[in-house]
Amino acid sequence: METLGKVSPVKTVNPFNNELVKEFGVMSDAEVDSLIAKANKAFQTWRTTPFSTRTGLLHKVASILRERKEELGKLATLEMGKRLSESIGEVELSANIFDYYADNGEAFLADKPLDTPIGSAFISYEPLGVLLSIQPWNFPFYQITRNVAPNIVAGNTVLLKHASNVPQCAKIMEDIFLEAGAPEGVYTNLFVPGSGMERIVADERVKAVALTGSEPAGSSIAAAAGKYIKKSTLELGGSDAFIVLDDVDVDQIADIAVTSRMWNAGQVCTSAKRVIVHEKIAEKFLERVKTKFASLKVGDPLDPSTDVAPLSSEKAVKDVIKQVETAVKEGAQLLAGGKRINRPGAFMEPTLLTGITPGMEAYSEEVFGPVFMFYVVENDEEAVKLANDTKFGLGGSVFAKDTERALRIARQIDTGMVYINHFTGITPELPFGGTKNSGYGREQSPLGIYEFVNPKLIRTSEPGNPY
Image (cartoon, helix red, strand yellow):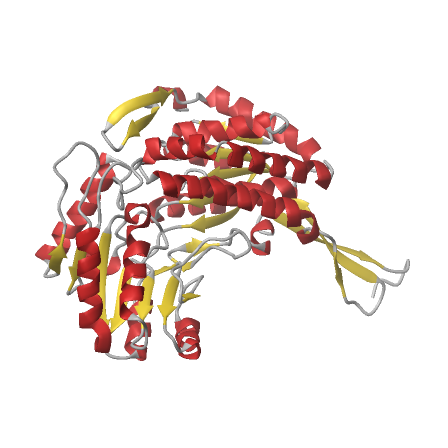
């Protein structure tokens, strides 16, 4: 069997200057087995630990996150490059999610009575066991939180396999749990490569797996989970439509569209990947977008005046530029940007593309970077058809003064989420997840806590008369 310790170490490389900051050795098979054993042992106690203790742990984690938000924000910016204000906001959001499940978890998991004509029955929500959580780099604290918070309060224990380019964020979350008083094994960080995931999924002590990441990674994990009969959830890519109807304040909504697309340098699953605008306002809308683009400042993510930070890595910027170059070769029109910026770091110009048609790679691929793709449609029906003409189904948004009209469109869009007069957002009480190739399952909200519990039926009746 391959020894995981023989593979390359995980590294922090600052995308602002591409300098190596720190590296960590990858764990051996024996080390991973020992940590799985500790997580499984911890589960035997944690599953029956009073809710007051579980919720108290989550509240303490939230408190530590808020107290250290500037430090943690800088760490996220160092490792994956996002603007510091975005990183700090992410830490605050994570604290809110921990508090949300601390405040509501016990009520969500209370026994649910069922109507039955004879005797009585109820659903008891019971934890499954050790959960493997595989998370990406673009929101290094939030992605952990929305999966871990509900499962810890539900009585599961968690093994985290984070993205290899954010090892310090991964490690510090384990440290925070321990500081907050988590028993050893309740929350465990693993430094292992993606190639080692099936071995962990196959372990009989691991009962379920959650992944946020790419389609190939999701397909691989879903196949492994199916092979070993494990529950799984997937949150994969998105190509969200941002539909703009003809009755809006054009300048206001154009500004929102640019903000949505440039958030986290375009590295957001639910950002405005495809901006679809009614032809009556398209020209004016595009002119406003061009004006907004001209004002964007690309630069140091620690500088408060920066609008667009570097991408997360050298590979990321090269991949996105290649996608743009391919789109132009296939006939798309490049109206702004499209090139690498001549400076150290993984920087790319904010890019504006139009004239994208079916058959082009950009029409069907997810572009994970600061690339604004602009489409024009004649009417509402064409907007819906274009929005749905994708293998993805994560989120989307519709902007209109006539909210009833927007609601009719929202009901026709094949995604897990649609926001009206707001780009796809994130709050603890609202579910997050998609359909089609964007995955399955939900995180956040009450729905998020039910993914990895056993809804066990308990029925009572008189002896000898069960029906």
